[in-house]
Length: 397
Image (cartoon, helix red, strand yellow):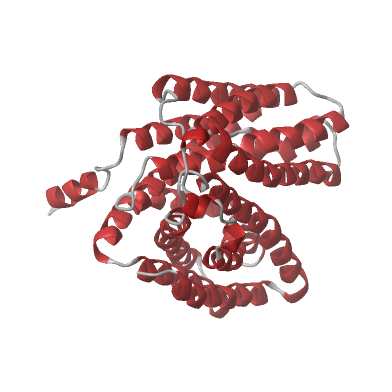
C-alpha cells in the first residue's frame, strides 16, 4: 500500500516539461530571497523612525506600483516576449532592492518603492505567459501547481530566514533580496536561453490577435466573479489571524502553526490532488467543490467558538478549497489565450489578485470593526456561495 501511494505521488510530478521545472527552480530561488516586503513596515517604523501612517503610505505605493507594473508587464510580454520581461524584472528588481536599502530620505524611499514595485511585479504576467507556453492542456493544472509549490516553499524559506537576518541587520535584508533576484536572473539566462521567446513579427493569429480581451464576455464575467472569491480568500492572511488573536485568544505561536499548516499541506499533497483531479473530475466539479469548502470553513466560525483543533480543521478546509480551485481558475483563462495575447490575459489576472488583496482586507477590517467578526464571516460565506454558483455557470467541463 505504501509503495503504491509513493509511486502515485512520484507519478504526479511526471510529464511536465523541462522548461516548467526550470522556471519553478528560478522562481524558488527568487522567492527564497523575498525578505524586504514582509519586514518593510517594521523597517520603516523601527529603523527609520517613520510613523505608522507614513509607513502605510509606502506600502500603498508598493500596491499601486504592483498594479500598474502587472498591466504593462503583460502588454510588453506580448510585444517583446516573456523571456525578456522576466530577465528585465529580475535584474533591475535586484538592483532596485539594493538601492532602496541605502536610502534615508522618506520621499526618495516613496519614489523608489513605487518604481521598484512596477518593475518587480512585471515578472508575474511574464512568468504566467511562459508557463502557458511550456505547458499543454493535459498538464497545465499541474504545471501551475508546481509553480505554486515553488512560490509557497520559497516564501516560507524567505520569511523564516528574513526574521533571522532582520534580527541582526535590516540593511542586510535588502542585499539578500537584491542578490537573490540577480541570481535568479543569471539562472534564467544560463538555464533557459532565449530560444523559445515569441517574436511578435512572425506570428499571426488573426482569430484572437485583433479581438480586445475585454470583448471576451466569459473572461470578463470570470474576472468579476474572481474579485468576489479572492477578496474573500485573502481574509486568510489578514483579518483571520486578528480574529484568532482577539476573539479566540490564541497565542502567536499557535497562529503561526495554523499558517504553517496551510503552506505545508500545499507543498506535500497539492500536486497529487491535482494529478488525481485531471484524471477523475471535470474542472467545473473541482472549482465548485473547492469554493464550497471555503463556504463551510467560514460557516464554522459563524456558528461555533472554535478551540484550536477546530481552527485546525477550519484551516484544512480552506487549504483544500485553495488547492481544488486555484489551478482550475488559472487553467480557465489560460485556455482562452494564444501566443499573441497570453501576457495581457496574465496581466489582468495578476491585477485581479492585486485589487482583491487591496479591497478585501480593507472592507473586511471595516466590517469587523463596526459589525463584528461574526458578520464578516457570514458575509464571506454568502459571497463565496454566490461565487460557487457563478463559477459553475461559466466554467465548462
